[in-house]
Structures are given as structure tokens and as C-alpha cells.
Length: 433
Image 1: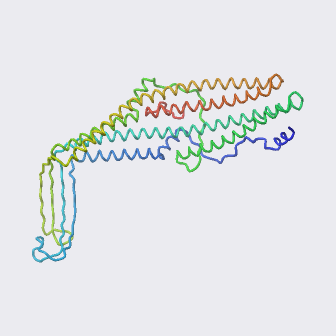
Image 2: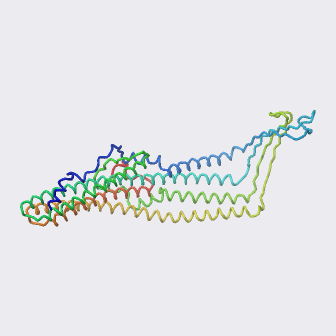
Image 3: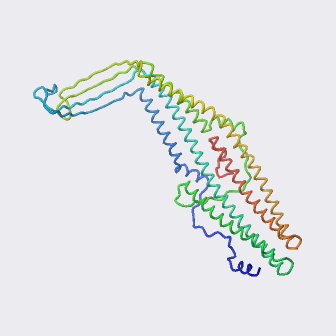
């Protein structure tokens, strides 16, 4: 026993203290959410899909007014001279042809169906952008809360070690006076060592969480989170029926599925349009010469064409069948996601309510555990209880404080999940609980 106390005296008085962290930047939750969207690959891809869909829409609209235009210049060298109508005087082995052509479809059902399809593609891309934005925000908030949880748990471990030191000082005094046996000190030394080990583990978890948050916001190193408030969870501003309606009207997953169904239906109509004739007009202007910029002879023509495809070895029917299958799959996905949205909204809504109640119960648990520890400490000082009862109260208090920390941030994460399903913020200030 004497040797163990000597070793304890020779060790630093604050074994549980975390090694000093380098000065790292701190960031608020609102700033972290804003910055994360610029560095999330899925969100960047979603923005690119919107740009692609908008260009498709422009092309479909221009097809109603602007013909397709092609300009070319060919120079051909022959192995022997020949009579060239562009240069009738002498045989030549060089022929230069310049041409410009324009084609415009006067009537084609595909142009109308392409217009409706590109409109649906834009709606799908916009819904995908909203979905990825909220997914990126959800991932960032999870990383942010992970940092805050580890901050709070580090504090809980420090307080646990401090209580163990205070109890060890009391036990030593009682052992020295003969009021207690030496095992009392040994029990408290074991509790102190456990608290120190947990502090070191918590330090490593905090550092990892800070690096993950830094990755989310595009930082080269760790980023710390600004400590949040401990206010009670705010009541949701919408009822469950209202949340269900918002999820079906504005939920990004359901909006994307609905737009994909419209796009697939428009694609099917476009394929069926190939069964109808196409009326088009084309213009061609050609110039011939032996020089690079031909001008010796020129020919212009205007062609009106009416094409009516009858049979192309079944390729048209195959494309129609594929488009029909894609439409049916998109319709089934939309119907399934409607049920998924109802499940997810209800589950997230109830999770927020349950976690809010769990926070309040955890507060009560911490208050009870703190009062129990104080009473056990006073009783141990007076010799009215054993060291095991004091240790149990210390452990119960540490566990109650850790449960409160976990419950508080699980509640905020439940709010983030609900907002991701709804596709909208429920509170104006994102730093508010």
C-alpha cells in the first residue's frame, strides 16, 4: 500500500489532463453548413446536372425557331488532271468545294415531346440539388455535433477525475486517522486511473471529430466547433399532418421521383412520335473552284421533304418498349417513395419529440445523481457509509452527465434529419436548438 501511494505521488497531479491542442480555428454551425456545400462532390454534381438540364431546355426551345446549320470546305488533290466545270479552260488536279446547308423541321412531334421532357429534367435536377444540399447539411451537422459531444464528454471525464481526487484525499485522511481501511484508497485510485484512461481516449476521439469537421468545410486541418447552448428543445412549428403534406409537396426525394416519372413519360411520347411523318425543309449552297476560297462556280438548292418511316428492322419498336419500361419503373418508384416519405416524416417527427422528452428526463437524472453523490460524500466523510457506495454514486453521476450530453445532440440531429426529409428549414436561425 505504501509503494502504491508513493507511485501515485510521483506521477503528475493531473494525469487526466489532455495534452495542449494546437490553436485551431472555430466555426459556427451556420457557417459550417454554408461552406460544406462547396466541397461536397455530390452537391457539385447536382449543380452540374441543373446546368446540363437548362442547356437541354434551351436547345429544345431553339429547335422551334432556329434551323440546324452546317458549313464545310473540302480540298481534293487527284492523281491526274481532269476537266473541271469550275475551270473549263485547262485540266486541273485540284478541286475545292465550299458548302453551306441549313435544315429545319416544319412539323415533328418529337420537338414538342422533347420540350416537355427537358422541362421535367430541369425539375428533376432542381429537386436533386435540394436533396444533395440537405444531405450535405445533414452530414456536416452530424460531424459538427460529434465535435460538440466529444467536447462535452471530455469535460465530464475531467469532472469525474476531479471527484476521484477529492474522494482520494478524504480516504487518505480517514485511513491515516484509523477510521477506514487501506482498501478505500485503493478503490479510489482505481477510479482515478479509469477516469484518466477515458480522458485520453476522449481526447483522441475529439481530435478525429475535429479533422472530420475540417474535411467537411474544406479545411486542411482540424476545425473546432463553437459550443452550443443548453436550452430546452424548441417545439416544432408544424404539426405531423402539416409535416406530411410538406414532405409530399416539397420533399426533395419525392419531387425528384415525380419529375423523373414526367421525364420518362415524355421520353415515351417522343419515341412514339417516330411513327408520325416528319415535314422538313433544307437549303444547300455549294461553290467550286481550284483555289482555297472557291468562287468560280456556285449552285444553290432548296429541298422540301416528307419522310414517313414504315419499318427499320424493329429498332423503333425496341426503343418504344424500352421507354415504356422506364416509364413504368419511374411510376413505381414514385409510388413507393410516396409511402417512404410518409414513413420517414413520421419517424423523424416522432424521433424529435421522443429525443426532446429524453433530454428533459436526462436533466432530471443528472440532478438526482448529483444530489445522491453529494449525500454519499457527506456520509462517507462522517463514516456513515462505505467507499463502495461513494464509488457507485460517482459512476452514476458520470454516466448521467454523459447520457444528457448524448440525448441533447441526438435531439438536434433528429431535427436535421427531419429537415432533410422535408426539404426546408424549420427554424430561421440554424444555430438555435
